[in-house]
Length: 611
Ligand code: M6R
Image (tube, rainbow, N blue to C red; front, side, top):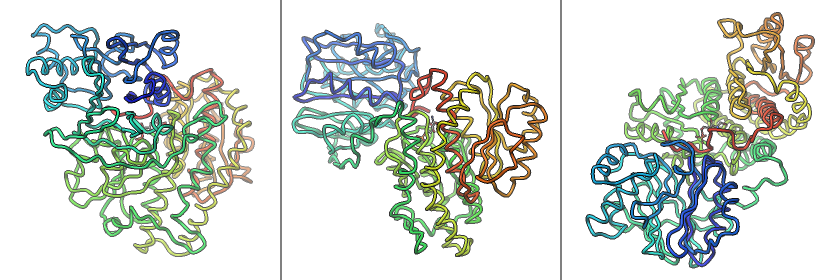
């Protein structure tokens, strides 16, 4: 979380940085700030969104060909002007932006306080900056050297970018654990947390690795490791168009991304599976296919929506491959001394590829000899690069903080992997294999049909927008869909919502049911359908309001449900990709009906790069 942007070159830095910060606002929007060199080092910062900062700077002389900017998701210190980045060193000569957390900041701060340093913010960033300055003054060394020495003492995660009033020709950046991309232009360089602020200027980028330091001038980029040895920058070509990161006529990114799903699922399947000849080709998985086929168990590691995709995949893998699967919250897995053996297969699922909890979990499993396969959306991201192999989800940039199209693309990839392994192991017969391949092939079209019910979902949203709680129920493959529906509603509308296995409801949550409680049933035709309808009866008998998602042509919820949404029938194993669409649209429309900023829900950030 937190977005950073920096520029050095022949352009005006401020407009480049401002536009970049707006693109990165999904990473945090508690405060924003910029530092420029214009008759000395100038720092401007403001609590709130980037637009609030922009407003305060109208009419100011902001000329500068070098600058750094930041949009914050607060960790140390409340969201406020004083805690906003960039921070200035005590001498006023240095300015720095930071994404990450310095875990041992308190002890470093104490050392500095003992030396007479005063702090103007509550942040760990200001501590690191003054620590760097203190080393520079005491050692009489160049800034680059001071940064290197300081970072050897630091515990935590960071991307930092520094500007020095006395050296208007240079930016210094370093990374460990948080992402940093450098765009290479003609006589100019662009730095950012991801490629979206860079793409309109250049497609040539360098992904900086952990423990690397970058010394950036307008026409020169030098990368070094913390041992002061030069590292050759590896230049990558971005495979992304500007249109992909703009709203394209939709009111919100979230709605755009929900509506993109027929295409994103198609793109994800395209070139990998051929339903006519019955083949699945996934090169990043192929090289680890033997380990997967012979695995005693598979562990899926993820957070949030990606964790829900893991839960669906658990059912799919166990069904098709007969390999036991465990699905772990990344944040719990890492710190409970998990049992991981050499050769164990771990599938890490992440949209951003930068989620710190997932990253540290797979790094520790990797150290124990596990094989890490990443199912990741963002190309070149940290999780993608840390994994031994895997498959990209190819959903395109997901900007809305609520994850939507990433979930369906993750399910598409995970289903293909399970089918491939099941076929190789012989745990799935040809007929079922071909049937599921055809079902997968039909998903984009079926999702398009569900999207046509947008207006109906909007009307249902209007009806229930003032509810204070929601319950989401589903069984089997639809249980994780219920969890995902509840998560979407919570984050977008701030309504308390819980997802439960439909049958588990009678063991406690049924006590919540009264005439005011909307209960969303994901009740499409599957092996447990009749039992789920009985659960619906139980809710109705207690006067709960039932919103049912059912398969086309199924009449069993009639007379029971207050509102019915029909979706095309799909095999139960494939159905979550279709059934989640009404969950996404319902949450979206309730958030909009409540007048909330659905793309930037309070307290959240898209990419959670702190543990
Ligand atoms: O980028 P990741 O998939 O690793 O992110 C994991 C979660 O932070 C993410 O899914 C989060 O729960 C979303 N806000 C859900 O909509």
